[in-house]
Image (cartoon, rainbow, N blue to C red):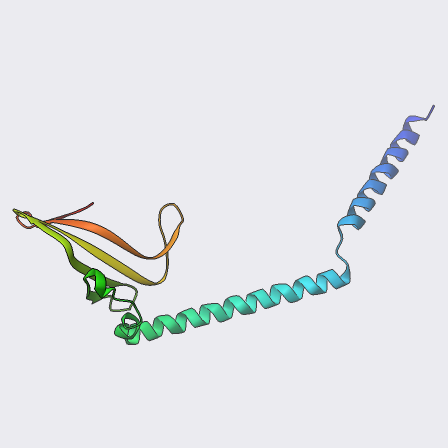
Length: 146
């Protein structure tokens, strides 16, 4: 039978051996550390380059928003017509006379918004354009999205 102090020493040695084993098993080799640092540095460079490209694209759109609009498919077969662009080129708007309806003081029309950069809806889905049906009340100057 072991003495209490012997148990303590044996327990301490066993715990130390477990720690040493875990420490060695999870340690990175110098080659792994070097490779991971190189990958991290490359990812940072790519991220910086992407941010710089995006900033240059935004500056170009702001300088000439219509240049970006000219790259869009106007979808004229559906009756879509260009209506406007944000001063910074962050969106462009189109509408169509196709299925336009007037019922007394109410006008129903379809609008399309286009974006040069990805947008996210409340569900997290990514989109670059959307179409919505708008009903405008001429008498009350109010809009209702359908």
